[in-house]
Image (cartoon, rainbow, N blue to C red; front, top):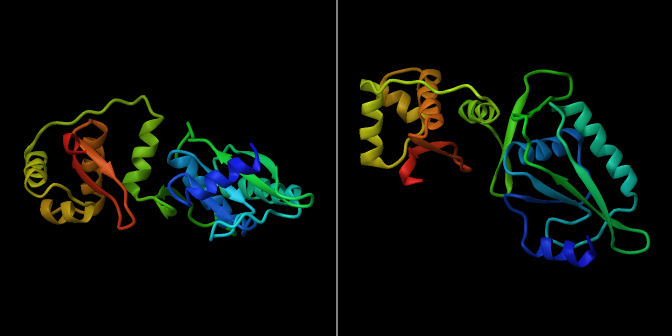
Length: 215
């Protein structure tokens, strides 16, 4: 990869698969970005690029790579695969191009400093956001050979009629409509998504579901 290649990527701006960093930030923060890429469709972190798209490079690419290795080993469970390439900007500065492929062992979780609960992240547009319990379940199902079994009962018919009328539904709304708790509501939506009846969507306002043919 050349500097011109880097500039072409930068010209597209940050988004679903691209993130700019002036330097490697805190271990937790960069681990979150890498986890989000691995859990979604993969992506590239350009280290040595400002938020405004100016390509400035870093003085010590080896130090930045060391920070990345520390972040992944300490905060990613399971560890995220990544590769890095150094692209010279000047004689003393490089852009570090860090590629994270879409993972085949999803979901990956962020392990915070001091332990505590682990959190999965996904990429939504240019943001890395916390994955909902339903998203985590669907990520797990992508690498599972377990089949899906359900019966088209009264609750399922109510849900389908609701979607035919309103187009989409959130877990909270379905819990209210079906008079069930959030966990039970989410389980049904996940089951029908895995069965191909529903389509799952993520946005900066949260998850929602539609009929699959309306995706």
